[in-house]
Length: 264
Length: 357
Ligand SMILES: Nc1ncnc2c1ncn2[C@@H]1O[C@H](COP(=O)(O)OP(=O)(O)OP(=O)(O)O)[C@@H](O)[C@H]1O
Ligand SMILES: [Mg+2]
Image (tube, rainbow over all chains, first blue to last red; front, side, top):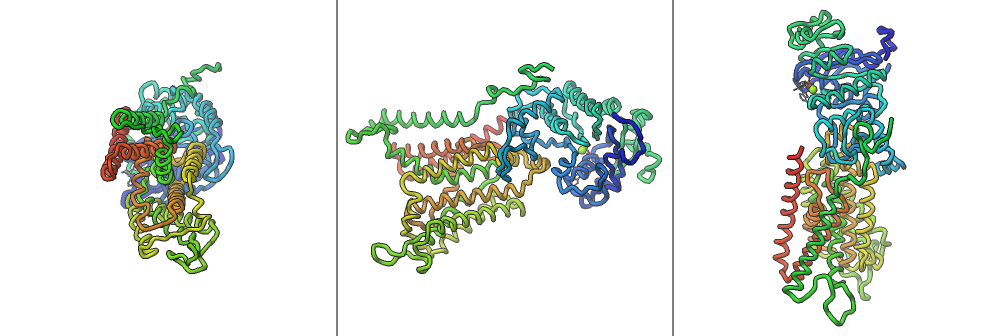
């Protein structure tokens, strides 16, 4: 983990400038300026509909932004789609699990970037053995209990499915991991597993953006909290220098960060 | 870390533990249906469904009956191979039967022979230039027609986002009109020997089996197959995973169109003629074969193997009803009931599987 040179520009993994998304008249995201440094784990909090998922969708190019810049790994990027974002090294667990129910675990892990034996365009031959083995290796990291990885996702519990989605991000060497409410549907044990994955990423120095409504989780695991309200960032807090009551105040709008005074 | 059978965190890869393939149930159903007809034959008709009961022929099986089943099944089965892929993506193709008709008409017009029994071909569509062409010409023309129909379906569905049901219904009506307009309703006959050889004897079966094996392999062992299932299973997930969903659908509908064209070529070659009205309703038979074979109309589930078994069940039931001397009207009615019954079964399966999650 690297906590060095916090203000060195070379340390910035992801930066957004004036990132904005309008859905017709709905200003879901407005002028978001955000910075994530190497090895940093940042929580994004905010009420339902605050624009958190929208923010993620702009970074990962699931949607095309209305305005603004995304700078990733030192370059201004304009991903054409989510695959490009993934190829650039951004792994995402989306809030609405992006899993195919009728496929098994390896197929889901490698969906859209299958390992192939021979390249024949769309008819490329799959390397099923390699994908299976990489799945085993990737899932070992997560400690997820899955009875048989060759069963379809459909037959798995909500927690297991969630864990597969998370394992997908953990299985690939990514430069940035984004998780949108990864533990929202999980039981106590599964939540603990996911939190362990997050700790592992922290140890490995891999940066993470975590969207969560769980105050305990955020204070246990994260370095920094960025609060969204009505599509705008309204606070940027160091976990060590704040407390849950304060964060709630920012979320509800009772309080606004000094540098974001124009939001209120 | 020690390597246990449970892996770390209880992970396993155990091929033996894989759930029972749904095709097995379909296969068992096939056996049961055959046995049922055999039993009815022995008990009530003093005849055998499967075996040869005539003394003057020394064969064990009743090959005549089996051949009819297999031939009937093969041509529509070729269409069903394409329809299966379309349904796995969560779509539907109602145009395939009518595309067969139109394609047969057009391909046949390039496969005619100039002289029939010493006289000029009475059914000639074009002038001399289109007579006695090498067989590759009508085959390519036919495949081109199927591909064009598939491409149009694909573009309408993937890019203009028209629901597959509507887009392919439009194509169905269009293709019917086209085949009637093409020769003003006249049949097109007298193909060259080369063209007639395509569907001769057991060739349709051979072509069907070959295509079924090819697409079975493609669906199970290639990226194309993986993406076909992924799109049917969860289109949004496929899109978010970076699969080019629209392009893939275009490919799937194009392949289905080409397979309909193959069926058209085989059928017109076997019949030595093509006429408006050919192939109509084949799409429903093909869909029925796929549904009997365990495909889910919601997409994501199904297989070529299942469809082949479904096709056999379909053929056995139809010829079984001839065997027990139900006439053609009953057969139509029974066919209708099979299709609806299979869809009801599918929905029941779906409800059961969603209740579990
Ligand atoms: N595709 C869309 N079209 C129109 N409006 C949208 C669309 N997607 C999101 N919105 C709106 O944008 C706003 C922000 O939504 P977003 O999903 O980003 O919220 P969120 O902060 O992730 O909330 P939650 O905590 O409930 O997940 C909401 O008002 C939502 O209704
Ligand atoms: Mg959200």
